[in-house]
Image (tube, rainbow, N blue to C red):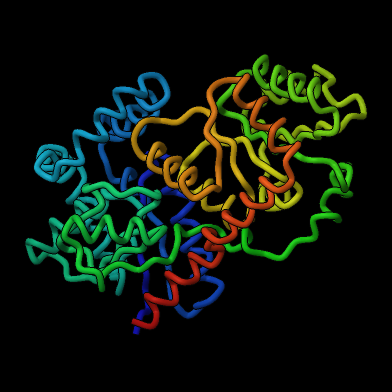
Length: 370
């Protein structure tokens, strides 16, 4: 019987953190008798490793994306894992595994390959003997996720299952649960009521825009460009934690009674998604999974080479997203979709078919019933 579950992640990319939090939340809701603990493996790393790992990823993926794409492909060769694995083992393993032993879990769930590299090394040396599972947080697969000491894998789709099997993972080890997301994205919500609360028209096409890809000037160009071609479109703009962007958007007086609602950081994204017809957003695995759970088609512009390319290729092939380039591309896609109800309906149906709103619960149920 499972009594303690340790959930491990890294802070290199918010998707891994969000997946870990979603898993912990579902365990607390469905299995309150199970003690859970969520830990960031980077907390056990020396400063030089933590800074190079987290800041290095953020810098390279944002500023030199082609280099990140090359690294992603380079490390897809299993033989290339040896050096980074050795560095991580020397830098982190002793303190991290001590923390694992102190908690005495019956089960470990990892949302990133790095913690599992350390756990696997310790299992191989007979320092620990704990059931271990891996959550693959994208719609593509990479050899870094594959480890001989992993007991089960939780994946987004049949395509990822087949890919892992092709990398040597036994089919019975792979569970297609979906990427774990907060259960609130599966809640039944009243679209009309949410639109009224937001001050939006019930019948107008609504574009949800999540900041982080474009500057204020570009976002302004998108809004004015769409309006110029279709004055019936209304907008929800989420600036996130970028207060400078939020204030600039507010000062621009874009609303003028025409339907532009501006937000900073929100913890009710599921409601904003419900109120919208399409979202302009990044292509991270968790964000995509949340959109699919809400049946919300995506317009995707900037794609980081590597895992995001895998995600976008999957979505476009399934009819759940359109990929564009630049401000003009976003404007053209939004205008075209607003004018084509049949296309939007088909895309929403594709999203609903792919969506797995109960993904975190499926994972927790499997672990507690195995």
